[in-house]
Figure 1 (cartoon, rainbow, N blue to C red):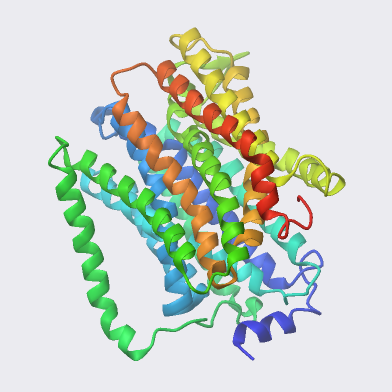
Figure 2: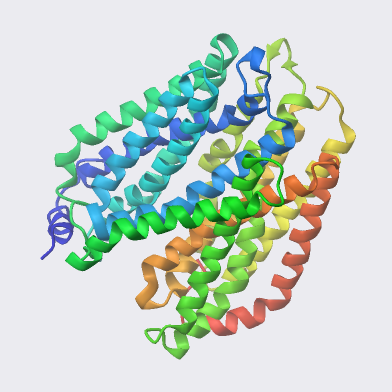
Length: 497
């Protein structure tokens, strides 16, 4: 019996945290502070990139800065593939989480230093560290429970709440510090948050009962000897890709954006090809995988728009929204807290709705279609908002309302997508399929980065109109494909939750 299996079995009688294993409390607060760190940094990242050097920023033009934020998000999800590999084959989920946290903290400390080279180093380190940590702390949560433990789903729901609590409060704290002491004080707060998470994780190790300590599929001796060459080869390949992109770009930064975009799009395509061609995948699983493709494409265009919360929508908050309401100053970072607040308020209602509607309308592909349609409508709303308001004249409810609309769209698509991925994944590729789901976010943000760069000479209203057109066309295609998708996933769709 593996260490993880023994820890899950021994946790059956452990109800020390809200009726759940005590280890869940450790992971809950670690994730809360890690997300505090991540979303706090993200709330001010674009403002830092485009602000003048005199104000402590890097002085990048808005189009490039917005592209950088998008490709940074893409890189985080792309690197989560490496995080999963490190946990499964090298060091285990617990150590991968710990090492990722250390790298993240180093990144925030680098950003806290007022120098351009350390700022770029910090951005790279935070992306790398988050890629190591993000997929693995969730995996440890799952390993706290035996496979047949009925508390498992509720445990993940509690854990999911920690993400939104961290995301809710961090923009408020970081905005306060940035407003009074500058960007680097805000990044310092993110470093403190990550530091608290690391201390909590180390001190709470015993509560995990060994969960995440084992390496499920360790490298053999020959594979270990080859690993340094593979790493070197990957680094060289990325460098060559950047060099190639430099032949049509006039800056290294834009070439890096192009290189990451290519990787973010090519990697999931390679995953699909490998799965379809594998002898370990039977005919029924290929049918399920075919049904998954329209859902995955819908997720790509969904995240393409949704993840502009820290990009184009952050610019609207700073440049187009009123700066005070009733004498109270409105900080643009505050809008980053609307989505997690709406999630906390609406997620229980959607959970209840899906339980009551199980087996009836809307089906899984219809939920996806509704989510993609709503995100397309939100893009139309942003196009109207950018066209209608100049200067800081837009009422708070305009941007706040779009955030709430996007949250509703997210609840139609994101949790449903996780469930659909687990049900439609070929048995031999269960873990890789989950990575494929996260790669939809990477691909979506890569597409966004390319659109932002390509349309830098056009207005933001036009940008959102193009996004809306792309998304609504995809939504229409998904609607037409609903019967086809349902017929091919019927054997896997016991319920539509």
